[in-house]
Image 1 (tube, rainbow, N blue to C red):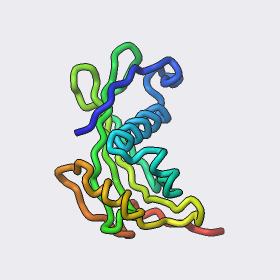
Image 2: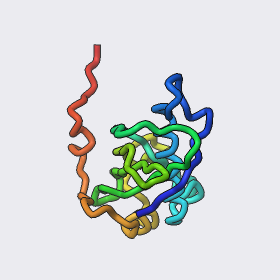
Image 3: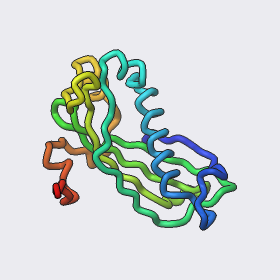
Image 4: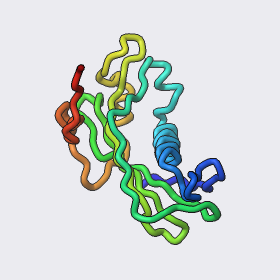
Length: 157
C-alpha cells in the first residue's frame, strides 16, 4: 500500500483547533498525485496526452480528531477502474503517529480529454501504465452506474 507522511500545519486547522475538512481533501489529493507520479503517470504524461482527472465525489469518514504536533500518514489504494481506464476510484486512510486509523476518504472520478472537455478512455500508453498499478484487495471493475451509487442526480429548476 502506498503511503505518504505529513506534518499538520497551522493552516490545516479549523476554528476547533483540529484538522479542517479541506485539509483532509488536500492531503488525499497530494498523496494521490504522489502515487501517480511514483508510478510514471504524473503531470508530464497527462499534459502530453491532454488528459486530466475529474472528481465526481469525495466522501470522508472521521473516526478521531487530528491535531497539530504529530505527523500523520495517508495511504492511497486503487479500489476500482473501468475496462477502458476512463473511470477510477481510490481509498485513502489517515493514520496517527501510533498507526491508529483516524479517518478514511473514498473518491470516484474519471479522466477527461482536456481539448474536447469530455470523459475519455485513456490513451493506450497511459492505460497500460494504470493497469499495472497496485490494486486494493477489494478492487472492482467500474461502470458508469458506479459513479451514481450515492443516489444523487442533477435536478434542474
